[in-house]
Length: 349
Image (cartoon, rainbow, N blue to C red; front, side, top):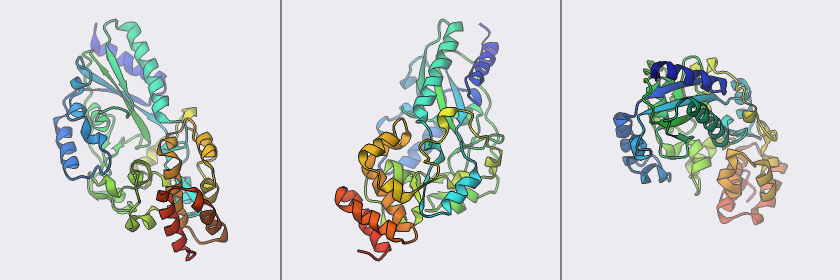
């Protein structure tokens, strides 16, 4: 088999399936491994213990699939609403802001299905094709691999950026035994820009390319299970699930394309819903409205915790105070602590 020609066919098939770019990386990740070890040693991963427990598997793909010699990397656009609408929403404290990636169907499910179709297509033309698929659910250094494959460069906010496509995309990988030719990395183009660092509400980007996740609103509202630190609550604003500020401000995202994938379109009006409405959902409504969504992973109590903080940051109104008081006796001790704080912001406790 001529693997150079076959690699071109693979890229064509990937684009036909809806991936905006397909490229191929090698398995050498020693530099990325060093950066990961330094990050973990500083404790910047917070409660994300899974970042440590797999040892060197993240940086040694052969420890996950022994026959791996090349990695097919893909990306797919997910933005369903333009950035201007997002800025407008962030300026309305009584409205809920949900990270744009979580407005539609859970990307893990969408990408995994597409990657399965992709792999089956490749298998039709390569009998010896051995593979494993990954979508942010295994110890894989996906951004480092995507950077090696030339899908973009890792920006100062630690997200991947592409000159023609910005950063509003998901990544996926196929580990394979096929000796496919590798694509070259691209040149970084952040230059002297510090927009993402300057705008971060909690200053979680403590220096270029250095993110302390413990300060990051995405970590606090999604990964973190405990009591949100008092010093950070007012900085969260109306962001109840994730934060996009560093992407919204990035100048390269003026080239970002709106997603053509129907599954990534917003569901249940979550692109713009008032906080009180969401806070008054009972658990069955929460489960119904978040079925098939990445939001469900945080569970009902953390959902209420996050909204309670946002309500504490909103302009005071009888409606907000009543909602907080109404939910207080129905919630867990964790949520009650945040409701109490929110009521104190409105001088009603």
